[in-house]
Each structure stands twice: as structure tokens, then as C-alpha cells.
Length: 172
Image (cartoon, rainbow, N blue to C red; front, side):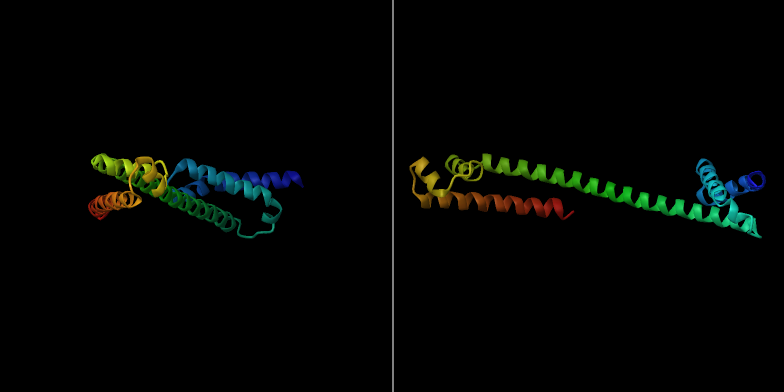
């Protein structure tokens, strides 16, 4: 019984393998992939060799398996390509966003460095050191209202610079 199955498999393999490979290659356009898929077809045939003995149109059955293997491969390849394209797109955006963030950071540092010394000191104490307006006023021996005025002017200046940056660089 096993010998009959083996003979059937060998005859199917010898008759159909080159045809199946050619058939799959017509879809895939890659002889190495077509060969692998054709081998997968014949693995499936071997796994179902008992079933094949009862099939009248074995060629049609084999080509159906081959067609399904090709379609599965193309579908998987398409999904992988979409995934890779999306990944590259996200990568491009994150790189671009990183450049914009770095440019904006440099612009803010430049703007702060050009502020009058008292305003610069108050801004840095507030935003970098995290001190409250009361603490800044106490440390610098100035009125809290003076601290608030300097911070308002610093933030207005930064807002204007950031708005111009966003207008010129992100509207492109």
C-alpha cells in the first residue's frame, strides 16, 4: 500500500513539478520563489496522498493548490510591502519631526540668548530651574510684579518667533 502511494507521488511529481513551477512563476516572476512554492505544493500533495487516490482530475487539483499557494504568497508579500512602506513613512516623519524639533530648540535658545540679561535670567530661572515667581523675586531682590512682566515679555517674544517658525517651515 505504501509503495503504491510512493509510486503515485513520484509519477505526479515527475509529471507536474516543472509545470507547477512554471505556472507559479507566471504569477510570482521569481524562479527561486516559484521553486519553493512548487515544493510546498508537493509537500501538501504528499500530506494528502490518500485523498488524491480518489480524485479524478488530479491535474486540476494540483493546479488549484499551486494557484492558492501563489495567491497566498502574493497576498503575504503585499502585506509585508505595505507594512514596510508604512514603517518607512513613519520613519521619515519621525526623522523630519526630529529635525523640526531640533531647529525649534535652537531657535528658542537663540532667542533667549538675545534677551536683555535680566529677562534672560528670569526666564531661565522659571523655565529651566523650575522656580516660582515668588522664589525668583526673592532670589533677585525684585518685586514679584517685575518677574511677571519679564516672563510675559519673554514668552511673547518666544511666541512670536515660534509662530514665524511654524508659518515658514511647516506650511511648506
